[in-house]
Every structure is written in C-alpha cells, then in structure tokens.
Length: 133
Image (cartoon, rainbow, N blue to C red; front, side, top):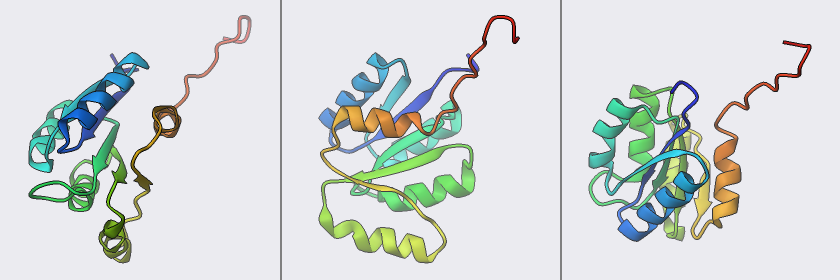
C-alpha cells in the first residue's frame, strides 16, 4: 500500500475528469475524480493523493486558489494545473507574486504526455540488482 501512486483529477467537466481517471487507472495509478474544489478538499484530506491535477476554471473556488490552499494545508500533495482557457494567465501570475509557482498545462494534454509529466512526481523504485542487495 505504501507504494501506491495516488492521483486525483479535479475538473468540472465530468467527461474529462472521468476519462483522465480511467487513463491513470489503466496506467497503474490509483486514481479518483472530483468535479469541484469543494468536493476535492475533503477527498485530499482523507485520501492523501501524491498528485492532484486541477483545472483552473472551476465553479466556486478556482483551481489556483485550490492549489494555494493545498500547498498550505497538504504540503505532501503536488499540484499540476491545466486549462483550456487562455485568460487564466493572470490568476497564475497573481499566485506567482504570492510565492506560488505552479506549472500550467494547456488543454488538451495528450494522455501520454500527461502520464510522463505525472511520473516525475513519483519517486522511481530503486532497482535491486542480484548480489548488490
């Protein structure tokens, strides 16, 4: 259980969140989906995902505010922001001025690229070579 790689997808577009959940599950991750920041927060507190992939444009609390709240309250969870809205740069820049640097991905992100980026957030298991254990 300690080696389980947990990823939470937060997107108000259910089809995107559910599709990404399936892609990550099929790639060997334990994945869950939430459709708002308000729905994601108790799930993060309970489930402790190592990576949370968050859409910037969410109803209620936006993804940048969620990422800043996570950084303060759940420092062991990493965040990747993504958006299909080119006008969110100002939100990300405002967060940057407050000392929060988040990577912002443009939708659509090809699944292979997203899986490659996500893998960087998980430590690689040390290879055990026979005779060197």
